[in-house]
Image 1 (cartoon, helix red, strand yellow):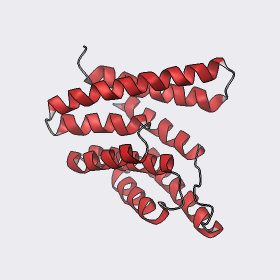
Image 2 (cartoon, one colour):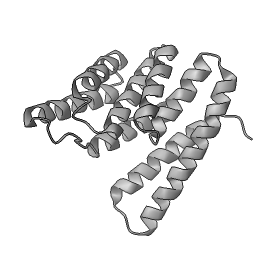
Image 3 (cartoon, one colour):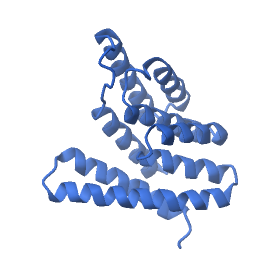
Image 4 (tube, one colour):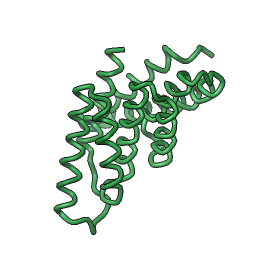
Length: 178
């Protein structure tokens, strides 16, 4: 359990390091506010303050959705799902995961949290079905990142590879073998 939380933190930190601003019309003041808010979300996650994480993530999504890129917004939805799963609110977590996947299907945390929520809701068939999707997606991401590393890509690629591997390890623990 501790490893999963540590991996969640690593994923979120990487997400924030990759923070992109999609709207060129966003004011510099709004951009600064959004970056500052994202940092507060990261702090709440690091502190394992799940009520604060949920509140902050929801606020940043609402106020910064036009400023942040889709991948960053998906990361915020993933953090919201983590908070809701940790607070034993799997129905809300499942909704967050669907929004996360709609924004950016390639976020492995969205898929991991969806499996967690489905298991908590005793929807084992759906969880099993999503395990297959999540395992395929993480396997594909692993290959992409390995190729980037082989071609001399940077440290961020190593961190992302480590992150995807951590999500895969979680999936291997909770998803039945084929």
